[in-house]
Length: 120
Length: 145
Image 1 (cartoon, rainbow over the protein chains, first blue to last red):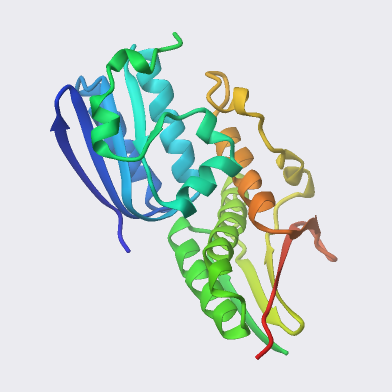
Image 2 (cartoon, chains in turn yellow, blue):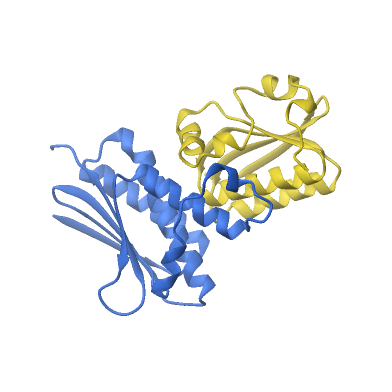
């Protein structure tokens, strides 16, 4: 399934809904969109992975890149993921210790931005 | 024993094709349904690694994927990059994953290897028998048919 990217605003958060397959071929488009969001002034970004069918190391690298970019801009970055196969990927790579991962958009956007303090 | 062999130009767009074929052959071979997501991910990671190496070293040769089943389902992904390129296969500790100094390439390589090692119980990375290149060999059990 092709990659789909849709952006919406929930409170002070910019939510990027991602669908389809995120792999070595499609990940550059995800990277471009995330860079656009940060360059466009978004500082609290949530990526919703609910409709992602496939996520590989390239996609994970793009997400880490966005996390670093937002930290450098004193922003926050979170993921919404409740699918066990994807959660297993985060656990195996230890990236569950790097990203704030929420079970729902509500949980991700109801937290104060200060809950995910920038490290810069 | 049945064998399916697929070769593709080292371009990212073809990795998905390799995944689809790899899972289709795995299903046909009798790999358990609950393992197919892992098969798909592991074949994708091995092919992504091969494509990245061919691009890094400007090697136009095809990446080869061979799938065979007998007592188990075996997938071999073969690249033609210099063997020293494989030394970069190391799993990164959590505190280094978001380190500012870590390049995107190093991160993706480390995470890719973590996924391979995490999802494939029977994994070997070794030099090809002839010429330059490495073979990533992955084996999964098959059910009785």
